Image 1 (cartoon, rainbow, N blue to C red):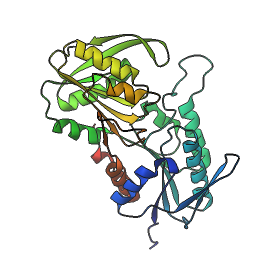
Image 2 (tube, helix red, strand yellow; image 1 turned 180 degrees about the horizontal axis):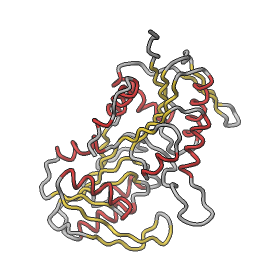
Image 3 (cartoon, rainbow, N blue to C red; image 1 turned 45 degrees about the horizontal axis):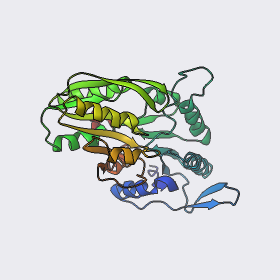
Length: 312
């Protein structure tokens, strides 16, 4: 009987902080990989150990700068050409996920393009978390394991022991996610309706639902400039909410977003470590997804079901 292929975990430079935690949870050391940076800006990854016939997990979120994505593509190609048995891209944050459709003429569908690039590089499987749109899974012709941060958010929210709890969506697009939390937690749901004049700038916002005397949890997949989030928090406090917290998976937090959060009406922003924080903030709580990813990686390696670990 043939022996089971070895399992090896490697990391790109952008997500090494998380890959080290995932490897530790899995119970093994992170694999050795070397990166050469040329003076003109080119990079070249090389594995410093054999990956022939192995399950190779490559951990790298594709947040900015774009080099993080290209580094992952080069690592996939290197593992594929080194005769790895399976090359599995572990992408906790799938960058360009907001470009999932043509919402106006003559624009790219960036999420599909990234899927094509990963496939062309030789990826066998993709593992990611809280995609901006579920249909992105259909952009791939290889298996996609779509994990949910609710597995760590729900226990944390319960441990807060807040009464008069209500779940909220910061916009109409996030209603499905917030409704799933509301149904699971047996709470009511409120939605913020906003209109924009241009990207990242809100013209008007209104609350659909009652927040008076409530402790509100705003739910979303990405917090970028924090404009929508902080405006929604202020609006809810102005409408009588006791407190407003947010549980948002991917802390992109571009520009002065952290400063906005620090000065906002939010009591707390709960995020994951899919993207490293650029600076610390007393209002931001970071929950690690390392254990969740390690468990799913083990289940895949053993050909076991992964659905049992999902809360929502």
